[in-house]
Image (cartoon, rainbow, N blue to C red; front, side, top):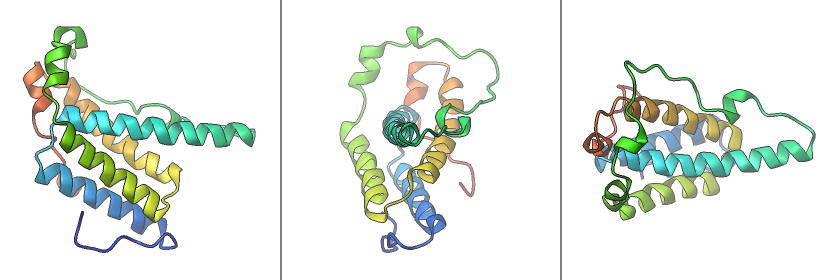
Amino acid sequence: MADDALPAPDSPVEERLLFLQENMVSFTTQFSMPIVEVSLVLSKYIRILLESLETAASRNDEELPARLTETWEVDVEGEAPGIDSFPLETLLGSLDEDRMDILDTLIRTILNETRLPFAPALTLLREWESMVRVQLANASGPGQLFSPIELPEGF
């Protein structure tokens, strides 16, 4: 995690979101984390947060905005190769589960310890998901799925 101390649960939401963002950027950059591994961890937390928000919304007869419930549109050049063109067993066998567990723990710990509200946290993860989906779609072969995630300057 970054050098800064974990923000208190009563600190501004923006401060807690920034802490999560900075730590995710730092970890994925420092460990040259492959796109596919980041994608798998993100999808887990998007699913968990979304299910929790949908349950709460349902209990209160409310509806969540599409920006939270649906993946964001991404612009990709050309046609993305189908997942069936990639050898799935080989891909899954090449994952670094320890590295994925560390990112998983980092996200979970920050969400739980800072008590970050789920809607803003989900929005942040959707932003990451959108960026990762573009990189996954631009992969022309299985090897590129294991290229380190490329984060834009200032992300």
